[in-house]
Image (cartoon, one colour):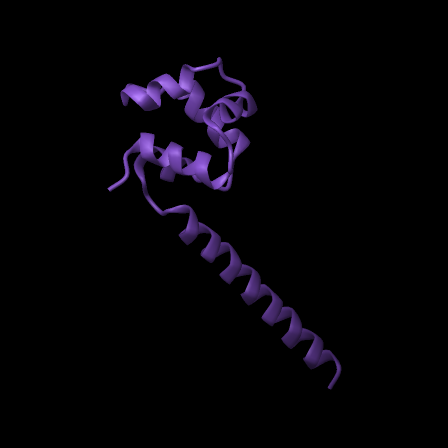
Length: 97
């Protein structure tokens, strides 16, 4: 099971960034996150908030607690979009009859 450190490392890998580039992108000091990840120490709520603000596709619930992984969230979004498209398609078909 992934802990918060491994979930943040997962985000960094998925975004194809180095830890230093990730730190710059979210606006935290150099080595502040890398030290926490390396030592498996507490990650401040400010850092977690900045991660979520810059990468909202990863739910805060998943980052903090591991509930619902990003792939499940993406599948749910795609499923909702597919249902919407099907409804629009049906509505267009009904109007053309």
